[in-house]
Length: 474
Image (cartoon, rainbow, N blue to C red; front, side, top):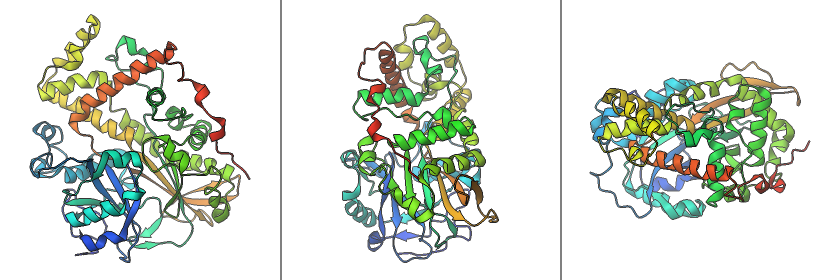
């Protein structure tokens, strides 16, 4: 039941995240269908008749499969997290994690990335019955590997309602009838770290993109069947030629890092299942994506060029890169500040046998609580920036006269396009994931070191299958 279809004239919330006027109950579940999911949330598209909800998506929280949740456990920030995020809103100690997460988007990430590129959304009330029915309805559409490990959190009493950024809308509830298409990119880390706290044995972290090293681990573990050709440093380079190279690589090996939508429906790329098999199954390389040529009169070999022009002219990635670079210490340094905060023996120091490294780490353990909080806070903000997605939506235009959207002119096809850029998946990272980040980093470094020594012989460029490339045709 919709208690109020117009929460406020701007379609957004106040700084304090109040005003959940919408209530979704069991009978509303039929109006929401599966669109995709990430590690923490499932995204639903609206197909009902409400003018206000037209062009919106709902992000509902997930939990590990089979986990029972007490209303008194994990609903609020821990005492250490309260210290960490005390400045993002009022009374953070008495606000649920879900609302705190929205405050994080609006009050931390939005100023960093530019409010015009960030949609804070509106929290809406959802009943347990609504979530239970939705969970059953979408079960058959979710990737199997996601279903095996997670399910809808039916004990969560709210969900986040945001605009569907795979569409271009004029105003709330009114979509222009022109064809629109969008690309979703997971840019990943766009720079090479230079922290003095990176261990000597991990020197290659300063020379090799994290994404490239992580690919080796994923291939070693069987999570992917081929290495991606994508290099985030190209995308963030600020040079058209390298940006175009990055986009072409994403088309060639999309994995879970690149998707294309036509009028809000995914036509290329995976569902977000975490392995590249889904991406391979969900597009017929030159099949459904050929629809873009039919409806937009856009030659397919011009598509990467269009995306390149939009990225280059928007300059949005510059702000994202600056946010990523808030991580000044790398996880090999930030982990020590984390143990200062939780006031526990440092496991990273316990497993370190290098005297020079231990001496450097002692400097970190001598820092004040406030200094440690800043290091970890900046690290987690940067982690969000390294893990978010960039959504760029387009529609053909007659000229560049529309003031509401940015526009680009594509010389190769003699066409104008309106476009807008939004960052999505700006979730706040839990403090307790610091241990996980450190362990993953060490695992990536260990496997990559063996790869360089040819101890993991099958991890090489021969795994790049030419047959999986997208062939661009006129």
